[in-house]
Each structure stands twice: as structure tokens, then as C-alpha cells.
Amino acid sequence: MSSPAPGPGPGDGAPGAPALRSHQWYGTDGLRSFSHRARTRQLGYLPEEHMGKPVIAILNTWSDINPCHQHLRDRAEAVKRGVWQAGGFPLEFPVATLSETFQKPTPMLYRNLLAMETEELLRSYPVDGAVLMGGCDKTTPALLMGAASADLPAVFVPAGPMLRGHWRGETLGSGTDMWKYWDEKRAGRIGDREMSELEAGLARSPGTCMTMGTASTMTSAAEALGVTMPGASAIPAVDSAHSRMAAAAGLRVVGLVDEGARLSRFLTAEAYQDAIATVLALGGSTNAVIHLIAMAGRSGVPLTLDDFDRLAREVPVLADVRPGGAYLMEDFYYAGGLPGLLSRLAEAGLLHPDRPTVAHASLREQLDGAGVHDDTVIRPLSNPLSPEGGVAVLRGNLAPDGAVIKHIAAEPRLLEHTGPAVVFDDYRTMQATINDSGLGITPDTVLVLRGAGPVGGPGMPEYGMLPIPDHLLKQGVTDMVRLSDARMSGTSYGTCVLHIAPESHVGGPLALVRTGDRITLDVAARTLRLEVGDTELERRRAAWRRPPAPYGRGYGALYTEHITQADTGCDFAFLARPGEVPEPYAG
Ligand code: FES
Image (cartoon, rainbow, N blue to C red; front, side):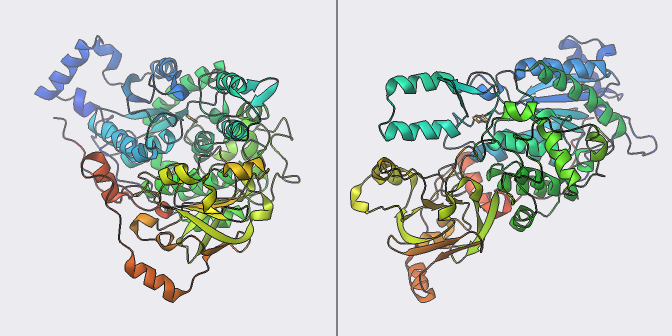
């Protein structure tokens, strides 16, 4: 199930085993231990402050460049308070920040780098337990992937969503309203003055995007997995409850060390199934499909696209939160937050209530007393936003290994559609030519972008919501069928078929599509077909040549050599499984 434990720890029961992993660094009689104690005195600590106490690493993704995590410096102090209070010894470690807004070509290129940093840092230092602080999109799966591989006791502290945006009496949602008003500007309906006001009103506090984008989807998934404090994921970043939650996480992780409760106790097959059900009931981001498959791989839990499609047919969408719904994360928090939503899923028998969480002996116990305070934001099962989950998995000759679509964010008339393709070989070409009237794009056209997958992107950027051409926007066209091997921001919307696997760069059938080919999308039948005969496709395949690798050296070369495709989570193949890694010798 999980990777082998990194050395002895509390609860292992080995006769004569040292009580703590960190004991090997601090507590033995050798020269190295003497040096470690001397250097800890150099840090200014008395021996009484740390000797024999669980060492808790606080992995902090704070950075001046990451507006979503700007409060995490303060929150780390709250975590330390909790750790000291519980009798532990907290040490803060800065780790890579993955700022969704600023990092290019995409933070997805670096998710596995942060996962590696997390795993190796936890393994190579005298750490008994960890608090993982993240939230901006890729930071959550990265920290949890690394921590799952290191398999120490750990608690995840979500950064929490920012406050609602405001403009001229309207509430604004991150991403979602940015796309909307950018299109309004392109259509000539608003000008520079309005755009400047919107720029000031969209993001008005620290915290992650306050729509149900990838950040809130993944922090909610972490809570559903049972590795956060109860209710943690929806607490607004600037609410004082957020500081208390951080302190509670510090307190609790020391208890987990005392109990020898490693992450693998919680990251079980049942927990991952519940995380999928939660993401679906939230109408969450399609990025969760990739991240949960990658996280489960680290836990030794086989998870596939079929798990998502199967559960999507059973789990209704209950959270009326943008982009699929009307409200924002602050409203969701006041309506009962994730405990409220989970209590509804549990009532319907859609969760596994007997599995443990970091805070309680069982999920059932954790949800005792949880409820919903506003049925318009967290809908009852009798009145769901959609009777089915928000994600469908498509297959066919264009996506033999699968593709996904967030059909609740699409215009229903397009969910069964056949149209002629207009193909773009890469994103820059698409940007430069999409408004070219010579392309003959009509509302029926199927826009196809390739070269945007895990290798070709590189890093599978969020290019999947291709823009509607200006001339169609001005005619009032607001959605078209769009296909790509890219991902899409969780705050985006439209009839966008994503994650087509295998990607075009490695020779997936997407590489063979030509402008003018007809393509059929049928979401109800879960199919995506290129209406071109097998003989012609074979002829095109024989003529196809793989594009040059995007990187000749460095991390990019390592990435492109080892990255797996979207349907298997885009982890590095050599990390995507549990396995023996030697514990470092600290003597
Ligand atoms: Fe950080 Fe959206 S940009 S969560």
C-alpha cells in the first residue's frame, strides 16, 4: 500500500528501538550526534527545549511572489505555537513556491520537483513529523505526493481562500470573472477604466482563488482524504479561525508522532474514493483527475480514469459555487464548508465513514455535529445542481487512453456535436491566428490545439479553454467545442475536451488531425471520434515525425524523459510507486 517506513518510530514496537527517528541525529553517543547537538545550541536552543521531543518540520511554500500564500509566514508561527504547546520541537523549512499566476510555462512543470523536494527533505533531516503548508493549485498535490512517499506522520494546512472580489456592487470570482470580463473587453462592451477597476477588485486579500478552482478543489480533496484538521479547507485565509486551525494542526501532529500514525494510515483506497466523490460533488476542477491519480500512485492505490467516470454517474453536484454555480468559497464556508457537504454525502451512503482521519478515529466521528446552514449554497440531495458529477471521461479513436470534459461548465447544446476541425499546432500559433477570418471558423467549428501535453507543452499548460474568435464573440457566441491535450484552469468553463491521451507530441492520434476533418463529441455516450478512416489514419501516421524535445538539458530534460501521460497522473515514472529507499545513516 504505502512505501516502507523510513526507520523506526513511535508505535513500531521494536524492542529497544529509539523512541523517535530524530534520536539518531541527536540522542546517540557518537561524534555526529555531538555535532548535531552543538549546532542546535548554535541555533540558540537549550537542550531542554528539543532533546527527546518530536521534531516537526513545517514545510512552508510562502514567497513574496506568491500572493495566495502571503500569510503563510504568520501561519507558520501559529503552527509552531501548537507544536510547542504539545511538547514538540518545530523547525520551519522554506520549500519551492509554485505560484499559479507567475510561474511559466506552468507550475505543473514543477509539481514533481516540489514533490521530490518534500520527500527528500523529510527523509534527509531529523524529522519525526511534518506540517505541510500550501494551497495554490499544484502545491497541495506536490506536498502530499512527497509526504506520502516519505510516509511520516503529517498534517496538511490549506492556505484558505481569499475574500470575495467586488466591483460596482457585483461579487467577482477569481479566474472565472477575469475570463468573462476579458471577453467583454474584446467584444468592445467595456473599456480601460472598467478594466482598471476590475484589476483592483478581483483579488482583495491573501489566500487562494475563491472560486471552486484547482486550489479549493485540491484542498477540499485533502480534507476529504482526512489529512487536514476538520473544516480546514474552506476557512477564509484572513479569518482568525485560520490561525486557530494552524495552531491545532501543530498540536495534532505531535499526537500523530506519539501514536506512530503515518500518512499511509489515512491515504487508503477508501480515502481516495471519497476524495473523488467529494471533488465531483463540489463540481471541482478537472486538474483533480490528474493530481489524485498521481497522489494515489504514491500511496500504492491503483486509481484510474474509470474510477472518476463511475463515481461521476453516482455522485450529484451539491456545491453551488463558481465556475459551475453561483456562489464563492466564502459563502460555502458560512454555509457549512466541507464538513457540511461531506455530511450530505455520508447521509447518502456515498462515503466510507469508518476510515480514520488525522483528527478522529473515524470520518463518522469527525462529521458528528456537522451540518448545512444554507441549502442554496450546499444543495440537498433532493435538489442538486446536477444529478451527475461534473466530470466525464471520453474515449474513442482520438483519445484511446482517455480524455476528460467538465460538462457542467459547458453549454448543453454542444454536448452532442459534430463539426469540422480547425487545427493549431501550438499555442503561440493559435494566439496569433485565431482571429484570422481566412480560417473560416464558424460556431460549428471544432477548435483543436495540440502540442500542449505533458511533454509537448511542456508541462501541460492550462491552454484548454481556447478563446472564441473575436468575430463570433461579437455575434454573441459564448461557447464552442474545443479539444486539446492541455489542461484547463479550474476557474475556466466551456465545452473543452482536455487531457487527450496519448498527447500529440508522443504520436497520439491528435497529431494526425487535419483542418477540415470532422470530429464527433458525444458526452452521453462518453465518446470522442475523428471521422477519418483507419487506412487514411495509417497513411498519416507513416508520414508523422516526432517534434524535437523541448529541452536539451537541465530539469526540463529530466522532466520530459520521465513524465507519464495525463491518464496516469503525470508523475515521474520512477517516483510513481511505493518502494524501498534507504534511510540515511545519521551516526
Ligand atoms: Fe493561487 Fe489561484 S492563483 S490559487
